[in-house]
Length: 192
Image 1 (cartoon, rainbow, N blue to C red):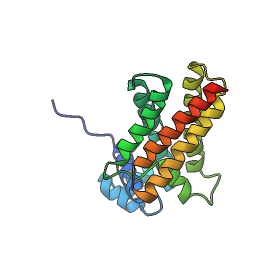
Image 2 (image 1 turned 30 degrees about the vertical axis):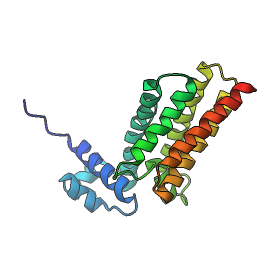
Image 3 (image 1 turned 135 degrees about the vertical axis):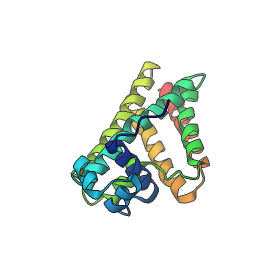
């Protein structure tokens, strides 16, 4: 049975996602996105009022996908919470080994919009990072760690710091080293 054609909005969003993630937000024009999506610029504007709206939609689609990947790596890992948290970093390291990996789309976008703290893309990035942190706090708390909120924030710092360092060095083993540090933090939290 032939596949139904992709709805126009989804085609535009898919094209924007590939281009934004690959080259950066400001480096990509709406003309390029329309061309890649196979639509006119007028059609693009029918579905998205502005480039800012399209950037917001791009990040909103990444949010559940990224959190789902973190959850999957965590849930599929066997063993203690230590092994499960380490698995998140191992998953990130494996992703970073892919030739098309460009780091965290939220962090890269925040760098491009650093001079616009109220921009919708910044707000979306903040919301995403808070959701990941809250999920980490939840799973750490469920394991009986009393300082789960503080520990979740520390692990988020390791994740985001690892993204930055891996982008600089192009060496995914930094993710694994950050995973080792997360395990050390968990052990320290348990001993308090």
